[in-house]
Image (cartoon, rainbow, N blue to C red; front, side, top):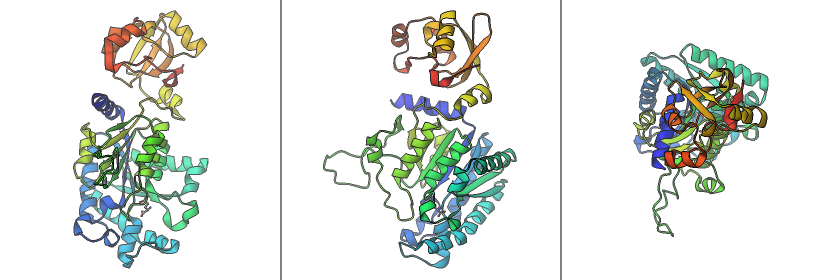
Length: 392
Ligand code: GLU
């Protein structure tokens, strides 16, 4: 399990280019001040250090979209409003005041790193309406093209609770899907998802809470594990994070939850370390996935298949099995896009492959049982699953 998760993370990083990073209010609050959560404000020190870390990610070749909370927190601080349960107009006023401080802090901090930022405020309407959705998407694309870091938040001052997205976990999942990102990272004030509530010391069961490093599928048990956050600055808590991961997973986007209060965690994610909780099935469908496989991904190699396999693919809508593979060309990894050729060398399909080229070369032509005994833990039934395959 541990090895599989490590392998998955390596593959995610290798094929990722566009990353959405969500920063929660707690993560950029002046945590160290020792003040009670509702009296905390923005920590310029933390924002600066995130700007530095994100610069390193950009320098490593990734495109970064930031989704940041903190407007209401910053506004509260400015207005000296420390009581809980603010009325909606009060929260909206806080958001309107705080958003400008928030973006100014980011702008100054990123400027020091030689990076420009842009502010994008979104509401439900912008995501539901296809035209607006596409407009936002185009804006994001253009900003990324210019090497600018888009900083997204909900447009809190113009929407009331009933029509609000409400929490930035959900917003960041929507942004990741809209931008067709390859990875979503949620920075929270906990280490990830635990087998039981880590803040509870006296467990009836006597079990110590353990961090789950990989969730392949969101079951009702996983949903139950995601309790509510105890931090009053945090809007969503773990349950909205798990829901966000569920959404991105169904679009084929992996999500990692890490503790953003631990400075090095973001760096560790990009070093492929087993930090936080990774949510990814490795095989989820996405809406525009077929298009993406067929047109966006650059094939890393090709697989020649025999006539029987070709027929099964084209006429019967089957997946590709090792038995039908005749020849492997090029060097590719698990998850790479490849071209499928018939024995005359004509391309008939493209897909995402479950074996790297070395392993596939070893198992080509073999029956499933033989493949299983040869590759052991890394076994997959299909070389390319039907859902990851497009006839061309
Ligand atoms: N949009 C809110 C803010 O900027 C935060 C929502 C959230 O933290 O999830 O304060």
